[in-house]
Image 1 (cartoon, rainbow, N blue to C red):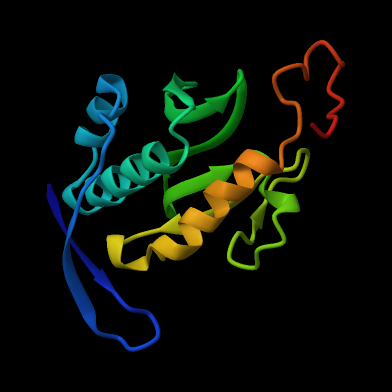
Image 2 (image 1 turned 90 degrees about the vertical axis):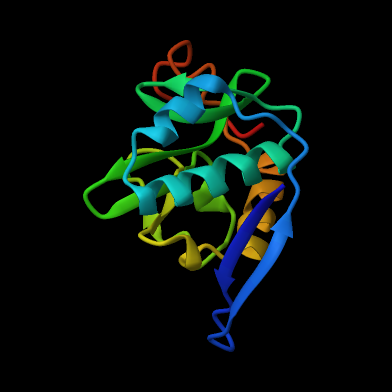
Length: 153
């Protein structure tokens, strides 16, 4: 069990509640999270635990030096430390029709959001996006074979 303290963005109140996760975080991903600052580690831990809880069938690993989750070999979600904060990226997020995933890729179908505190994470939004990441996918797995062209799965 882990105690989570999140700010309700509508009321401004902080909520503290026990949170139970049924999955074990990949050791390499936990190592990545552990190398972050305290604030960034809290963000990374909540993201990895939330992703693991929703995408239980996903394979996860460190890919291009960042935690990434794959469905049937296709990358769907990952996060990385950048100057603007922790970037949560959905490979097919541009088609999610979600205003908060406002950082769009220029070449592909990705969309992202940045976090600087764990209180900024709206878990109900995150869970909705994770559900969409399962249903809305572009075929990144075969992008090299298709010479850079993406097809919707």
